[in-house]
Structures are given as C-alpha cells and as structure tokens.
Length: 148
Image 1: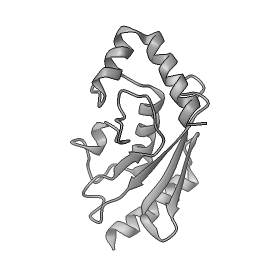
Image 2 (image 1 turned 60 degrees about the vertical axis):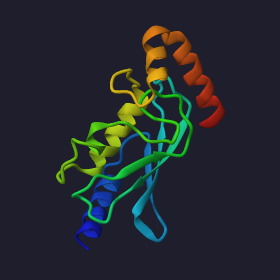
Image 3 (image 1 turned 135 degrees about the vertical axis):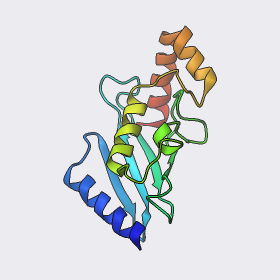
C-alpha cells in the first residue's frame, strides 16, 4: 500500500511539473506500469524521433528501482537491443529518496546525449569514439526508420 501511495504522489508531481519532451501515462488498470515517450531534443542525434519505453515499478518500490524497457528500437551505446538502458540510478546508485521525476530526467538526458562511457553496446560506443560521423548517420537512419 505504501508503494501505491508513493507512486500516486510521484505521478501527481510529474503531471504538475512535466518534463519538456516527455510524456507519461499509467496503464489503465495498473499504476505500477507507465507508458512513457521521449521526443528527442533538436540538438540530439535522434532529433525528429519519439522513443517509447515502459517503466515498471516493483511491488516493494521505493526500496527497489523501477525497470525500464525501450519499445522503440534505437542505435545508442547506452541502450541495448532488448531495450534496456544503462544508467547507474537504476542499478547500484538507487536510493528510496530518488524521485521518479529525476529518473525520467536522467533517462531523457541519456537518450539525447549518447556517451561511449559505461556502454551497454560496446560496438556502438566504439563507433561513436572512432567514427562519430558514421555513428550519427546510423543513429539518424534508425530514428527515421523506427521512431517517426
């Protein structure tokens, strides 16, 4: 019950102070599952794309972090083929005081600013380091193919 109250409060906070370029809807009958979408920033390699993901909250939230799965394919060093994203706050840096608004902001920042450091996809990270132009062209191509 504590988890549900916390989730409702966090959702209210997000609705009252929305993050630009990010939408959140709960599943009709399940407050523990959120359907989210990020409209990529205009200065991002993914500009023009909208990327959908599911944020699933565990029953023992906020003591365990949510899990995030992208349902839109993306060519990104920090998001793997299964749609999992590599961000420390969803792993070893999770604390019960972390807000879902800050988690969403972190995911949005990670999507818009791909980094070759701490990658989930080492080959994509290597390309970003060694041939940024080719990385950007592939990111743009995938965005056009999967996210528009």
